[in-house]
Amino acid sequence: MDILSSLAQWVLSFLPAFMLRWYWTEQRLAVRIKTTISSEGQGIWVDAGEIPNFHAWLEVTNFSPFQVEVERLHGELYYGTRICSYIWLERIEVPTASEKRIRIEGTLTDSQALYLRRNFGKNKTKLLINGYLQCRVRGFHIFGRTIESSNAEIVNANWSAP
Image 1 (cartoon, rainbow, N blue to C red):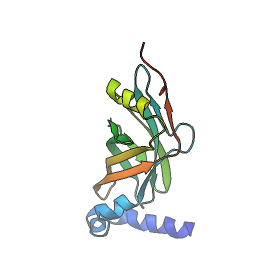
Image 2: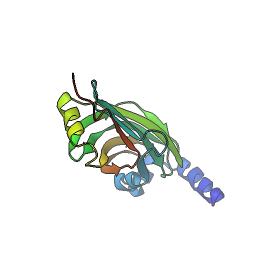
Image 3: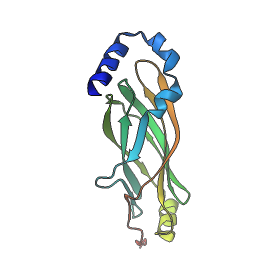
Image 4: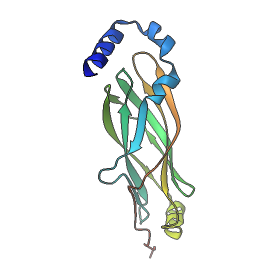
């Protein structure tokens, strides 16, 4: 099977992009990109303390036959309701049949941190992901991917301002 996929990639490398665009639509490419929250370490970490913020480790796996470049990601962090938004504007290349980890982060307002402290333990943490990716065939979007993770930690939720 490994030899067959290598041969297919070799053949695709010689075909011009305009011919490949006919078959490789945005939807076909987007379906072959998997996004998950990292199961190692801190997947989603939210600090509801004095300087409220969050970060999450996102794993992007490329199952398409082309190397993909993640150009930007944006979305929201949910804890029962939308807590905050994030924007990630770096570029990272994800080769075929491989995975890359991306750290996304954002800041919370004091009222968002207060909401987290009031509702601590009552909701599940979710991450909504939208993004733009590019490969040699075309650029494409991923929309509305909601990821619920059991690897989420909220710290300082029982903290109260002096």
